[in-house]
Image (cartoon, rainbow, N blue to C red; front, side, top):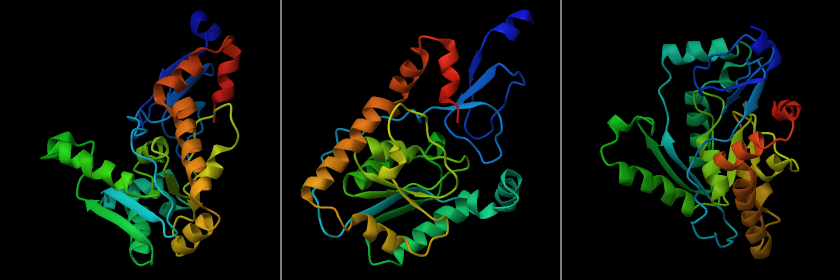
Length: 256
C-alpha cells in the first residue's frame, strides 16, 4: 500500500525460527543473527535479569571458569539444521559439537572450573522439577567464576553472554561469527575472550588474557563490564535508546 511504501516498518522477531517481511522498508528487531541471514536486522540484547547484585570477584593468580547448562545430543535433525544454516562450516553452527568440544577442552586443562551439564534446556519449564534450585545453581556458578564459557545455542547467540557481562564476568565466546548489538561506544567485544570454535588451546588463551591482570586492573575490568551492560546492553535501555532517535532515518544505523 501507499502507507507501507512511505513508512519505516520495525517488527520484532524470534530467535530460533525467524520470519521476515519482504518489504524494502522493513527492519527486523531480533536477538541473534545467523550466518545466512541477509535481511536488514537490528540486534537487540537478550532480555535477561541483571546479575549486578553479585559481589565483585577478588583477583587470584589462577582464574576459575564455569559452564552450567544444556548440551544437546547430536541427532540427525540437529546435524541437518546445521548444514542448512551453513553448508561450508557445519561445525560452526552446531551447538552440540561446539558445547561438547569446548567443555572437554576445559575439563582436560589445568584450569579450575565449575562444570555442570544438564539434560534439558532451561527454557523448557515443564521439565524443571525444582526451578529455584535450577536457577540458583546457574547463578552460583557465575558468582564463583572469573570466566564464563558462552557457546552459541541453536540460534547464533547466547543469553549467558549478557548475564555474565552484567555480573562483571568475562565471557569466553567460540568464533561462530556471533554478532552483537550496535551501540555508541568503542569496540566492546575486545573485553570478551573470543576463541576458535574447536580450539585446543583454551588454557593458553585464558592464561594469556589473564597474564596482565592484578587486583586493581581486575576490579576496573569488572566495573567496565557492568557499566557496559547497565548503559547499553540492558534490553529495556537498549530499546529506549533505539526508539528515542530524533529522526527515523537514524534508526537503520543500528543494523548489523
